[in-house]
Length: 100
Image (cartoon, rainbow, N blue to C red):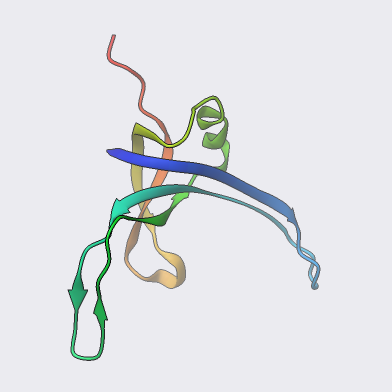
């Protein structure tokens, strides 16, 4: 999947509230054109780009650190169960390796 990436971020630590669980998550920040849309109770208009977050495998972040952003990149993805058992979401699992 080819995406326009504005950055990558990994966040890890230990929760302040009990049970003080460790956390470690990452996200790829991708840019997509703003699209006009509307429904019964809302309307969206705009111009330019909006940033959307894609879930990213934390161990994959290292593959992106040498990139200059923004960059158009080919990423490897896989479908994983969504939060709260709601369908599936696309996860970035790494940069696609160039064809040999």
